[in-house]
Image (cartoon, rainbow, N blue to C red; front, side, top):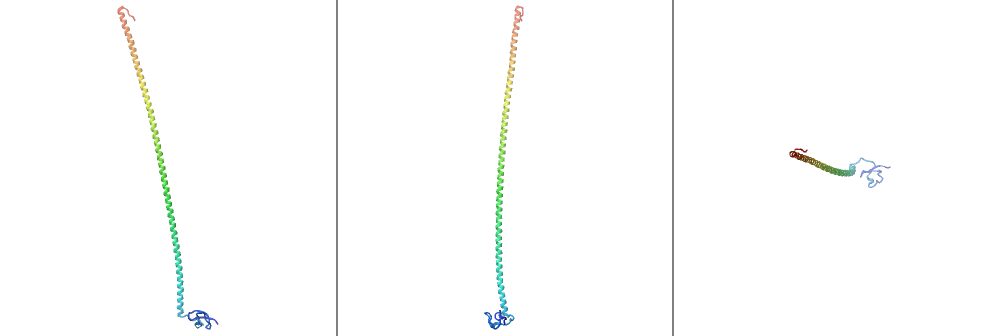
Length: 204
């Protein structure tokens, strides 16, 4: 008849009776026909076994925790590296944008300076042309006025000379005419008086 029996040496519970051989390393002398209350040695062994189990569990837990911590640290480090890479890329992009903006501003300033220089040159050329034109016009006008004045003066002088000559001619002619006729008249008059005095007659 089979019943539950227990090894008195190690506390192992086996199936069988005291007439049967228990599985090795048990012996029939250590097999009890009934389960007795656990002894102090069995309790100590059981506690030691619990400690072994707990130690193994703790080792497993520590290993798992270490693995998890390593994985988390690795992930965090990778995330930090990724963030640093992103920050570096963003900084490089910002630097590139700043460089592009500076280049554009410099180009715009250069274009503005060139436009201002061209405008100034055009204005100076226009002013010079206007000044030259004004000077030429003034010179031409002055020359024309001078020529007109000279012509007017010459004409006036010629007219005055002509008038003076005419007046002189008229005066001289008048004087000569007057002198001539007065001389003739006086000669004739004196001649008549001489004839009357000698012959008693007057010849007109």
